[in-house]
Length: 102
Image (cartoon, rainbow, N blue to C red; front, side, top):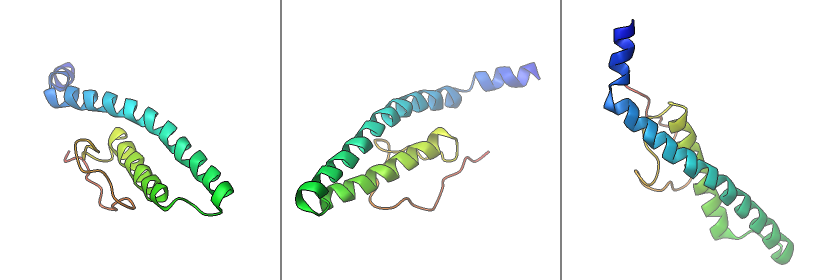
């Protein structure tokens, strides 16, 4: 049992994923403020113009999809690393989930 744990601790892939996870935890924290900013700006835009900002609407959808992709990666539901290690999302989340091969 101890030998199995020792072998897992020596795997470079495990530590590499841990570093990616730390990176995405930081990005995830920043993205929360971006979501709040988009929300507030859209609210002010509706008050001032009576309609939403279409460009910001699309960015908000892409940002939401990005947060979803990060959450999948951070919770081990996907091995696909989100942007900047893959393309920036465009539209709604892809229903295809890239699960671990274990």
